[in-house]
Image (tube, rainbow, N blue to C red; front, side):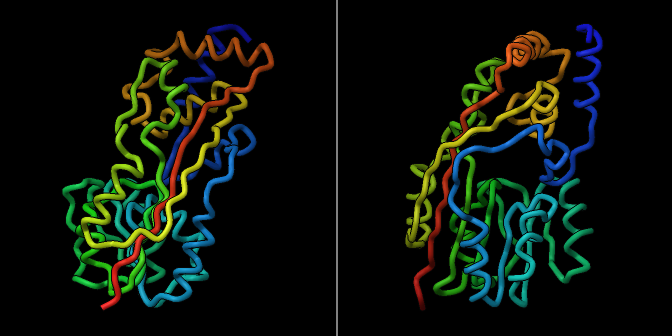
Length: 255
């Protein structure tokens, strides 16, 4: 394949559609290594004992749908990115889920009453104010979140001259805020893993799907590092980049 053909193939990856938080397009071309905490199992356990749940930053509702067989009677979700919000409403609305538009911001307010939910979930979404999470939780309610660490993929970002957008998104940042909001920390787990890409085209798709990693990314504007990565692939190397994440579980005191 000539360089021009290679670039054209990457530009096709750049234009490939992406919706919600679904990376199935990259099946067999991207894999995650490491063993993160078992968020799905813990979330399912909490839901089986709950009457209500709120899923913050649900994306297209993919992870909430994975938990469907454990849903309690009342299920609600929020999403701030309009295309994902429409997708979540299309998927979840017919199942009786209330989907509300709420920006991913530490200044956001939740459009729900006090003590509305036994469980609040948040997987890989921006945290609304911890005071709001505590407010909508029922007495003895639980907040469970799995987050991408603010210092994740630093080795990848360095190749493109980028810096992490939210370097302070760490347990050290959130734990005191949760405590100040009146929640008791039940569990904290940090983990390290890797994102491994089989080819540069898969990485192009990944970076376009997550635009905050390398702001302004495109094949044409970042061609030099892409070509350098392709050289690594032609030498038989995998494109492996280090990830960091964490899980926090916190509980509101019983009445």
